[in-house]
Image 1 (cartoon, rainbow, N blue to C red):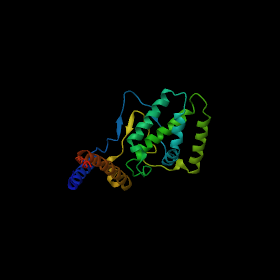
Image 2 (cartoon, rainbow, N blue to C red):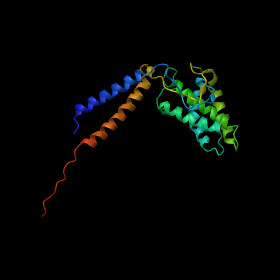
Image 3 (tube, rainbow, N blue to C red):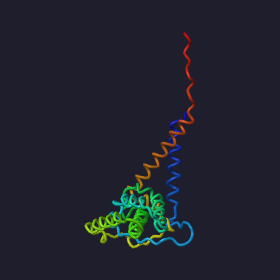
Image 4 (cartoon, helix red, strand yellow):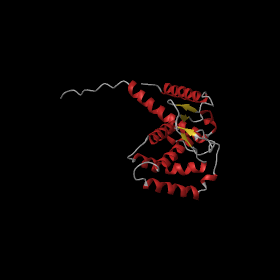
Length: 213
């Protein structure tokens, strides 16, 4: 059976390796070019618009997944949204809408692409009445929330489907909500791994045989 001291030591070593790896990430390495050729340009959002799109993101993607006619632009935007969402830790980190969050820029990227996809669907073939209705709903929400007036440092930054935006890992240690979330997720994953290893390495108890009467 694995000793408790060994388990704690392994956990400490794994945590240290994880955080040292994050801290060593170059500050400038936030954009990774994927594929070849030119990508599609994606207009950015203001910080206020970003919050409204985040609220309606599920409805936008649900509508997109029901589209019968899909062109190349639709396909590239939809794939980029999924890829960028993955690189932004699936939107699970709280405070991603916070300008100081290391996940703020990557959140801007996938939400800007989500709005671009919605606006593109309006021009696609087929019945787009549901698309136009959703656009009107979002426009009204942005108007009511003065969304165009709420800016941040990424509000005027254009994005591109050829560039995946990574979180700003070196800034993680100065943003407590992000740090606590990732630490908790890492410890949960590590605990599951250790439990699995313990299960594999613990010798099975011999079966007891009762004497025949």
